Length: 404
Image 1 (tube, one colour):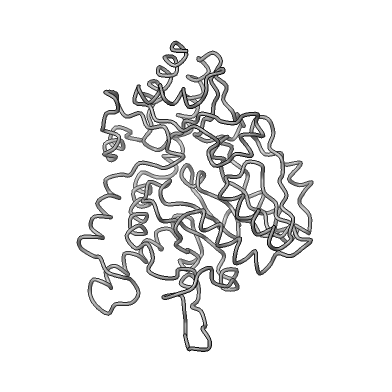
Image 2 (cartoon, helix red, strand yellow):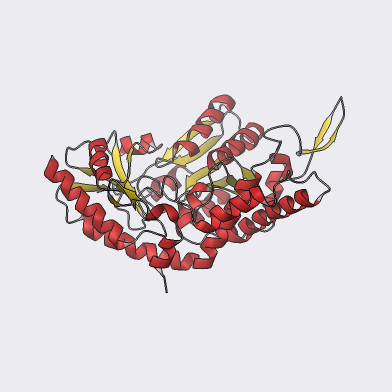
């Protein structure tokens, strides 16, 4: 059974009041709240086991290294990578994608090549490719998204050709909530000789993720959306591809041998983790994944499917409210417009009622504009969201309508 009451009790921040109201947190797509287990793991890492990793021949360093590498193993198991050496710790998903665009892109893209994205990409999976294509002379292409937010797969196949060297696509849109068929996309990319990167920031939070089943070549995701700390992200890469890529940054801990004349580099993942890493943040992310696994990803997915259905039903009661993104395959992200009321005004009044939502273009300006808007309000759910949160949200929206 999914014990939502017990789960909510694990998140200290959900128990505070905001403007005299219960904390109705509906911005998990931006950054998730943290369970007590993660907070305690971070405190323990700082107070009991803190030292630098990989370098010290003493107890504290050995304990810190073990915790750091155990986090890597946890992530490897969480996404079913073939080996822990396919897991690279980065600062964020954005850095993970920049790493691939910079290292793989510089080495493999040339004039006449193409990189194919969807119209629904977050800036973190658009701007790095835009930049590297400008530098290398490769062309950046986009396949369309339909008016309901679903991917136009006919256009995807139309644009896929042997000139495409990389297909980089979101697993789930942070604006539309659309779940993209990444397994189908990866298979199609491989048939024309292209690689496939999945931006899994949103999708990995809501359903089981198996990189070997998807057969993607790279995957990027962030820790803070997975109920872990900020300042830590992950890059999954097929080991043969990582081993063939040059370093992204240079310094300590990523080298094999250094002389005044020449440096050789360590094997992955160390090659891509220059300098002192985010040790405690990695430990915190490992704890977050252990917490998620203790609940069960299938259980979380089932809870959220029911909540998506309930949210759609409740929002349909509000006249003049338009959900932007109504694809059949959709997760718990609800971008919306409420009549002619500016999203910032909507959020201002909701905050007075203790309801936290997001407004703006959500770091995905092209798709917001493509759907006909400059700015949208957005509510998003997590494993701790319950029906009472949605009821308070809807009641607060009714107050917005009354006010205006």
